[in-house]
Image (tube, rainbow, N blue to C red):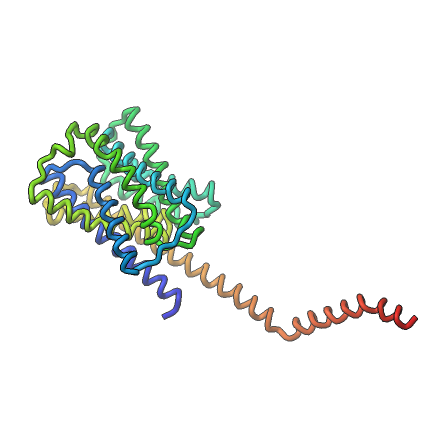
Length: 349
């Protein structure tokens, strides 16, 4: 199996793991929050990150991966920024309607495209832009209901979008810049993400729910679902870094909207959630956008691979061409004689 095939297989595996684990944790958390009334989302996320770090530390001790240190400022800044973005997204949901929160999530893709274009010089083809437009339109039709605006909620949503985009772009750039794996980056940044949310989580949850997480009655059933949610989160957090590292922040956001559609479809079919033809048409339109995005990305990657192979082939032919080598050799001899001839003349004199 060639290197390209292994990379493609690894990418498909990362995408599959991300979808399965994310849909699983949404189902688990929905049962935890809706049925068991544990509504402390930010504190729960901090526990997710803490358990993820502990599991990665155990994996490191068992030599499943190697620790690779790199610039500490980058790790600390990245970890804190990730924690802040999670907190802001939860605040955005708390201070806005569900419809406006969905619009906030939709805004992450165009914002990421804009930031990568302006600051990283990345170019997105017309075909990619078209497929993303179809995707966003479909998700919007399927999920966005009401758009109740307020100044504080809008400001929090803007901050949430910006911090989320920057954090996801940094996930990709840090892995490439310092040549670290997704596991190594997650292991080093997890403590700072967890600490940020462990400190701020109880206060944010009390602000949003008017309840104290420490005063909640933890029954056996609640505890079991919390533990299950934390265990699933290990896979969710790992696959997030893995997908962004292997693909791009935009692809990860596209995958996120696929998860949204799958969760909605799951709710309609198995949980008998109320739905309309508008929801179904939105999901189908979003799926068309995702298929187009995947097709165009694959097509463009193949074109880049062919162009790179052609350039490499030309370079090899240039190095192995005997006429070119002879010309280079003749040039070298001539230059050498030209430089040495005055010395010989001097010796003769």
